[in-house]
Image (cartoon, rainbow, N blue to C red; front, top):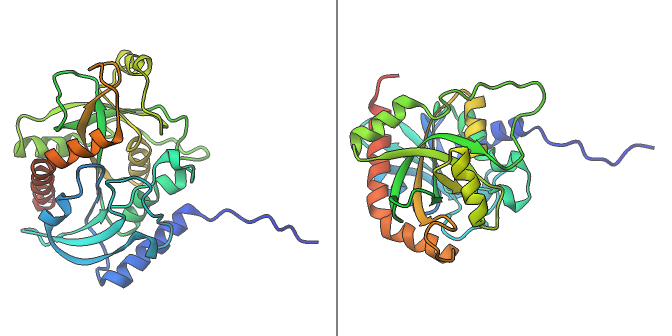
Length: 278
């Protein structure tokens, strides 16, 4: 009698299958750079250059529909203005709190690597711990704390996390906007917002930004050998910093308000990255 237990799919093969599907559908055999656009950042895709292909993410193996308002749920291939490089824009992000597992969370990053992308840009909307960073402020991520209790790595896979967020890419962003600050991002599991006590814990541990995405994706990007740029949009002051209650509507409102400015910043940064010699 044979067992009916299903063999888990190889997440790396699933990413290769997704990359092959993107290449076939888009006619673009490989991509140079990829972006995950979080809350408030979706407008950047329109400013990067010419969209040569766009599809609902669920038509590509392994991608799930977005579970969060503010995420567009599409994949795009964009020919970056000026350089002619191709950027894969991932508007479909699976969050850890959705319960689909870590492999689903990092599937977009692994797919991007399988398309040939050597640079990953991760963006998010987050809570700010520094009260001087008002809602609508973009902050470069200099390092991270993964507080989810999970990792996309398995087995004896010891990946170095020194300079996880590539210093040279942060410098390029500062050339576009010299006023950019940087800070440490801490990912919580979610979906509840952090308590004031948890925010104080994060501050003591060295975090300046708190949220529910990015850190697990960053680990997967480093495992794949990608250069990494992370930018957070402070959509609200974290719990206990301002004394105000938190809501997702506040996050969306801050993203809409800051959208045009941060989209220009991101688009200009990506164009500069793709113009830099390899």
